[in-house]
View (cartoon, rainbow, N blue to C red):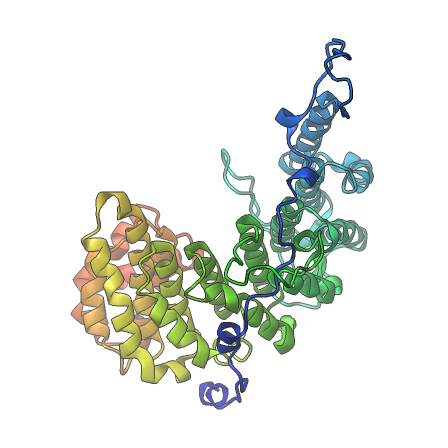
Length: 490
């Protein structure tokens, strides 16, 4: 199977090389339209106390007075409405329909802050509806989170499934909310609204699963590609300006593009292979320009993170194997970047790529390990002001070394890598990667690899610390780790 994937033809022209060769002329809007900005409450005239303006002092001037007290009330009301729906464990059920009717009006409100709050509330309504009406589709492991932790997913869904998991009435309700969010993403003229809508839709689809949006997948993908290419209405409000300076192409909103990239990863996580080759290739091409060395560190980190997530979440024939020839040198080179977030995402991506495309990765294992090792050295000698960032990059590099070795444990220098990683466990700055490390130990034991016995004492110590400090966020991995610990005499 792996050899078959390795021989699959890849695109003849690298999307990354094409992005390097093509000028960045896809951003819309070239001048600052500050006069169109709605502004926030602090910028508005307020006359709520009934004070009269001095007409003489304003003679000959055009005066616009905006009363904001009611807008503040409206904004706070939307926040309260959404929170009631999300955090009352389904008790908001009698009010779901009337709340949605209200939000259908507010998504078209003239002020961008109201539309943003409406976008957030739509996702919260869906969560409340799934808890109230999910029935057998509700995730059996769902439990209300303590304190302010993130709500767990409400629906027990399967990646890329065609099965209509949601009960019919709930499905209609959820898809109505998805349609409104998709309209804000595709049509709203404010970047901040599109950004919030992307974030809300990302949370919604991971909460309710593929049946919440698969009927609208083509429209969603089209909107995401337009945003990634800078061609959405919120990016071209003043019209496409092809004469703007090509060297000054960083005027996109960082928050917007980060949320677009995150939503691409979320769609891949939920839809899986249903994305198809055409849409996946379009995503890689669209984000390629943000990975160029000339772009800002935040752009490069965002693009590399998006590529890594696509490799993790999509079948190898769509991502890791298909684009290995472009991604491998890109990730390996970016591991040497001086910006910690860029190096961190590159390290994660390099490990994920090798793990997901083992046949293609086999000739590159040593090179991948050599690219990752300097990140560990940098963290060991990091200055105080960079310590946390460098440590996080090092954690990703250490976990990725295990992913690289997993591609071919017979030819990889497993003993050397274990000797480097084990004394640094459990990982502290990126604790989620401890599950990756524990899974590697489990896989070595299942395969009967001799390194397990050679490093038994150190592995036992590492697992004991991970379990006692609750560093394993994957329950299934934690259970297997306890079993391995018992076999190692722990």
